[in-house]
Amino acid sequence: MRILVIEDEKELCDSIKEGLILDGYEVDACYNGLDGEEMATIETYDLILLDLTLPDMDGMDILKSVRSQNALVPILILSARVQTEDKVEGLDRGANDYLTKPFDFSELEARIRSLTRRKFEQKSIYLSFDGLEMDTKTRRLHYNNEEIFLTKKEMGILEYLLLNQERVVSQEEIIEHVWNNEVNEFSNSIRVHISALRKKLREKMGHDPIVNKVGQGYILK
Image (tube, rainbow, N blue to C red):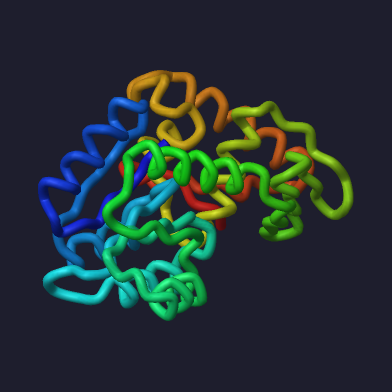
């Protein structure tokens, strides 16, 4: 699981990063708002920890920017702003939780577990493309109301492509989000699974919607 920490207090930021790495998370850290906003909107994360009081921009603006591009990623605000109106504003703008400073690391860990648990226990989200319909909760896929049976890995690959259908998805991203980095980019495993997925889709749809951009990755067309 990949987490982004946007926090300008370097000692606190590094402490959070080190603690989460020990917990088994993959963590990136940014010490200012501009870098944080860029990372949050370009890279793909499973959770974002966001400070509001940053030296170069307000964290609320980062929250708005991220939410305009990614409605699904959980965002946990970490802030010294303790006023109720600040908490209400943050939650109304799209944050999933709000933790005031100072805090115990054990509470932060619990909040992270809760948010990620909610993410995977969420109600069904239906993803669609060119007649394909995927229910992300039941893990079932249909094409024109006819079910297509996929393996767990094939379903994971297609789900990630559907979630990112407006852009090219790199092989490294697929490995990270479907295999949890348990295979390396030189493994033949991903190509075998994508080949099998493309064959199943072609059999049902009459064409292959997955386009391989050489040297870049895959995109639905």
